[in-house]
Amino acid sequence: MAKPIVAIVGRPNVGKSTLFNVLANERISIVEDTPGVTRDRLYATSEWLDREFVIIDTGGIEIANTDKIAVSIREQAQIAIREADVILFVCDARTGITDEDSEVAKLLRKSKKPIVLAINKADSFKQEMEIFEFYNLGLGEPIPISAANHLGLGDMLDSLMDKVQQTVPQLNDDDEDEIKVALIGRPNVGKSSIFNALVGEERSIVSDQAGTTRDAIDTPVVKDGQRYLFIDTAGMRRKGKIEELIEKYSIVRSLRAVDRSDVVLMVIDAVEGVTEQDKKIVGYAHEAGKGIVLVVNKWDLYKKDTSSTLRYTEELRKEMVFLQYAPIVYVSAVTMQRIHRLPEVIKYVAEQNAMRISTSVINQIIEDACAVNPPPTDKGRQLKIYFVTQVKIKPPTFVLFVNNPEIMHFSYQRYLENKLRESFGFEGTPIQMIIRAKNEEEE
Image (cartoon, rainbow, N blue to C red; front, side, top):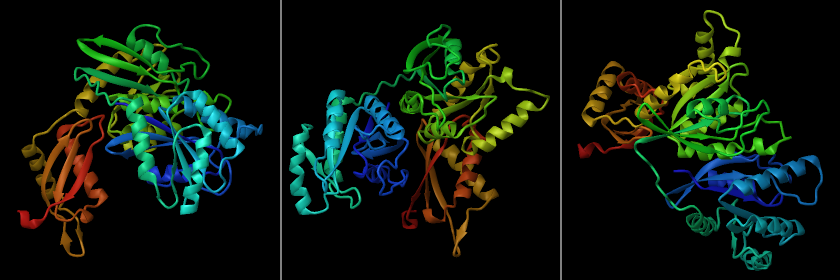
């Protein structure tokens, strides 16, 4: 199910990035006391009342400023507003309503999107009392908050979830028999050509001009008795190219497509190789627990020798070290080389992502792994693994009950994960492990 998208907007220096970091629970944005320091919109996943949502941080909107960067920031914020399900409009309690606030409010009213009005830096009772002037913006009740001091955030998030609930119904449209497949990647890597080859008709516009796919397109297809839903997405452009901001920020559409999918096809240009933008979006898919296939397109254009595929695979594994489990398929959308293999690989990865293992079998594998390579010790105390059980699929998620979770070293957890992969495959899917304490008295 796709997560709702919440865009944080406002004029410069009202504390949007600080609020973003609090909601994201980590320092992602650069926070400086300088207007306009947030150059690019950034995203993170947050959660409130058991509902996950994606937050987007935008640069400060300066309506009157005609400077090139200010104009581009304004445009990217407008894209954020258009893409978002709910807007979180942030103002500054200390300065009161400014002309810029009024102009941004006008822009937001035109969008017809649900809006939550948060008045930041309301650190004192006096400032809380002064927030009533913000009713004049005509955007409903202003909510006093302090992002820096974590004040009033519960009320703000409650209001946000109310708007999300009204705007994005929590529908669960999972169809067990249908495999949802998202094609992601930067513009001009050939996603639309692969999409058309898979669905068997010209549904996406194919052009040499980067970014001709503007919106996600859903196409149901039946191949060899298996139902697929292919989701084509707008491509992503590399950083620094701000001429077409709609491409630069189409990453949001890709996040939506990833959320809705079972399996993600990460399309990479064989000639250009992997970029940071590729790692970002496929990293999101990895964290979301989706099945992943790396599709290296334009393989017909790559200068090859007898060891090209092996060498390219090694380089790809080095670049995307967190995706050692993902199968790699080398294709050409132009010559149709190996395109026919993709449905078979997608089906296999979807099955691996939804695999369930019986508790007795898992515990035997973990017991054998511990016998070969004993668990780590810390200050004379050895880690004991009492019991392991699989608690969910998509992705396969295991809970390990141990005597002390702090002794579980990351490298030993990785060793156990590799043992599970050796025994059961789990090819193309991340595995999640949750380490829980179990009192020895309970034994």
